[in-house]
Length: 128
Image (cartoon, rainbow, N blue to C red; front, top):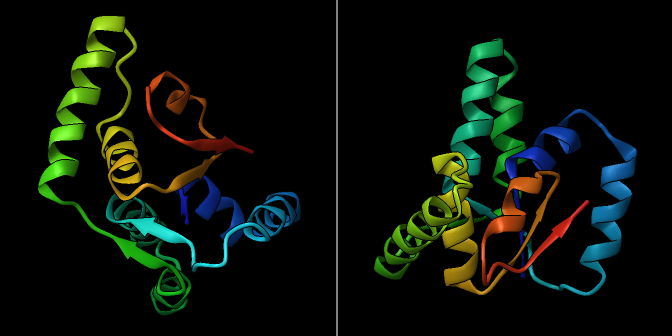
């Protein structure tokens, strides 16, 4: 299963055909519906509220993805990721650490445009 990062969501919503085609190619190897971690849902929805965009259309778009929620193990992984990044001096945004923890916990591959995920050990990801 693949997990979609907020950076990819934004580009899909904006109609970026390059990102769409790359995602379409990746999905050929994954039959399950793409997952959407709850922080990505929140970040994207927050952006729509701030821009006073079409809330109904945005929610319809977001509901196309399978929700990815936290578990107790996700919470532990988040703490471990944060400690590891602090030790490396490469701390990233809290939501990105949570997204990584969720992806690791659920055994998914994160699809992102964000290089910050490169410093997270044990994270399977595809950088578009």
